[in-house]
Image 1 (cartoon, helix red, strand yellow):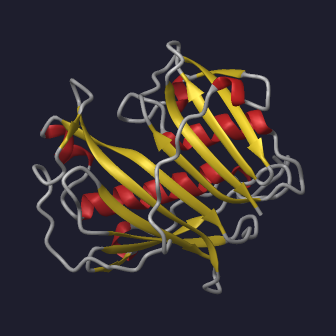
Image 2: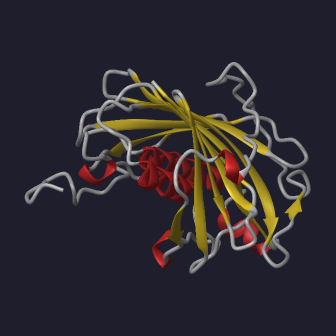
Length: 265
């Protein structure tokens, strides 16, 4: 971080909710991109893009009447089961980006939504798709989305990815091409649901990979499998195959807590 940085302390979300652009089941909000949103090669951090997309999704869920407080009152909470992110181009540091999100019609177990991030000129910066599920606050088991969500409105059917986002699969440890690394989940990694936020999974993997200046991420996908709690020790295994990198975070029982696929440009 620069010693003097006017943009660093600016609030990320620029507009009040009264200035948000609201359409039927769609929301767009402007965000200030800060120095901390970029890596040492001036590239937008995937975790920062995921944080922004999760933020605008949470705000829209409140608008729809299915936000955090309502869900917790019913004994459930939203968790991201799967996210695919594509970084189209790197925005300028300290610029203002607009994050847009819209949900698709929910199925019994998943509520899917898409995202787009654009710069001041309307150029696409990043796009994403996520699948959200409802977990019971006590048992941490999956509950039916349709039992808790009765959403009326016109669902936008724009799709950021033409193909279905399929779940990434774990690989055998003997297939790893890099030495195993270990991370410990910190209190600052936990979200309001008491477990590690999935954006932190991207940080765990990228800290282990330490990609070089010429290794630009094109797409990154994360699949949730088991919760990670504060203090958990997670082993990170990596398998490289050309421009495709597979990674997985394993708990003490050597079960995959998450899997990750990165494709380099």
